[in-house]
Structure formats: C-alpha cells, structure tokens
Image 1 (cartoon, rainbow, N blue to C red):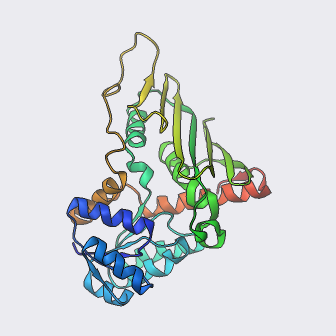
Image 2 (image 1 turned 90 degrees about the horizontal axis):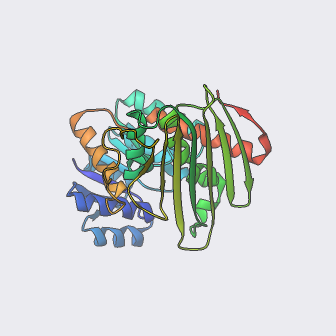
Image 3 (image 1 turned 120 degrees about the vertical axis):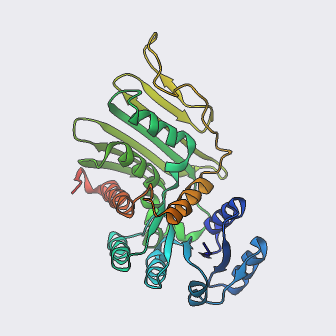
Length: 317
C-alpha cells in the first residue's frame, strides 16, 4: 500500500519513523508550509507534495497527523477521495465533527483507524489480556495516571483547537477504562490549573479514578495504573518499567502467562499500532479500535471537561 502523510509536526515524525522501521510504503508528505514539508521529505526520503489533492492522487492510505481541529476537513477529503484513513487521536475536538467523520466512513465505504495508542503499549495491552482471562476476577477499582509537562506548541493549549487537557491527554486513559469496563453511568471531575481528576461510576458498582495533567517540569512524563479485582491487583508504573506485577492470594496458581516478562517500552507502541492498522487494511479484518469507540472516548472526555468546569455529576447518555 502506498501511504501518504498529512502533517510534518511531532506526531507526523513519529509515524514516519515507525513506517520506515517497518519497511512500509510511505511515499510522500503534504504540509501547508513549503519549507517544513521539504525538510520533512528530505529527512525521511519521500516526496513532498505541493497540495493535499496531489497527495491524494498518489496514495491509497492517508495518515493524518495534524492539529486536532484540522482532523475533520482532512479526513473527510481523504474519505471522499476514496482513501482509507489512519487518523491520529483524538478523532476530533468536537463531538459534532467526530460524528460527521463517522458518517463519511459509512457513506464512502472506506475504512478509518483512529490511533488510540495506549491500547498498544505492551504493559497496558498485557494488563487488559490478564483481566479478560479472569486473572484478578471481576474488576472493582481502576486507577489511571497520566502526567507530563505543559506542551510547548501553542495549539495544544487552545481548547478551541485541541479540545483542552481532557480531550488531548486524559482521553488515552478514558478510552482504556472503557475498553476494560464499558461505558460508565456517570462522571464527576475537578480541575485545578493544569491538573484534572475524574471519578467514573459503572453499572455493578465498579469505579475508575483517572488523573492527569500538564503539571510536571519540562522533560517529565509519567504514567501508571492499577487494576483491582476480586482476587488480586495488576499494577504498573513508568517510574519502574518492570514486567507487570500480579498480586494474588498466596498459594494460588497464577492464571496463564502471569509472571512471564512482557515486552518493555523499547518495543515502540506507535509502530505496533501502525503495523496493526496496515495489516487489518491488507487482510480486510476489523481494527482493534473501532471508529465508534474513538467517538465514545471523545464523548467521555468532553463530559469530564464539562464536569471539571463546574458541571457537577453528569450522567453518561
């Protein structure tokens, strides 16, 4: 498959580097700034296309890695042109825009993969597998943390463009929680400066606590989770990137594969997600992130943002 990138910023560079390591068919890039796209093309040994239309004529798959507020027009242009689309998360900055993208997918019959990369981080992926295998029993409490330094690129800090902290950052863990537990019934959140904490309540009594922010000094990015079930706990922290720890009652046998080392973060999750997307396109098999799930993650992130702004406890429709 001939792949074209739209964008020449940080995420476009991450995707391009992953395609190069994979030996995938990345052939060109389009970005509005001529000097930026020329430098990007030279760096990755691909063609710089002078317009989006020129890129669309030359490729089969379009990878959109641009500011969030541009996702809708770029994805729609690619879908209408008959191209399959890989779209950097979040699907959009507004729910209405996300729904229009989803409608275009249905109308054109083309395929859309939204790059919710946390599902492809080995510790997160292995933890989800262990939960589904029943290793810790039914989940009761899930705790997620994602904290970094304040982005230095202005558009991230503009909620009208990025959706804000909740949509750009917390959406990773909100998607992961829904991947494990399904949609919550209600949401309550609070925000202080660049820090947000959300509490999600689920049918059956399970709870999730999701915290995140842009509150660390430059250069720091920390993530962690613990998943507490009826029989034990699965925990992991980027501060100590060891294999997953499974804490079960002493004397009980571990479920299959618990205790075996998992791949560390030296295995690039961006490469894993893009490899999956291309393989699914090639084989015609389902994506592990359905477009509807990406819309659901955005909807939940927007509810967290509303609650954090003083909206109180909100019901999830």
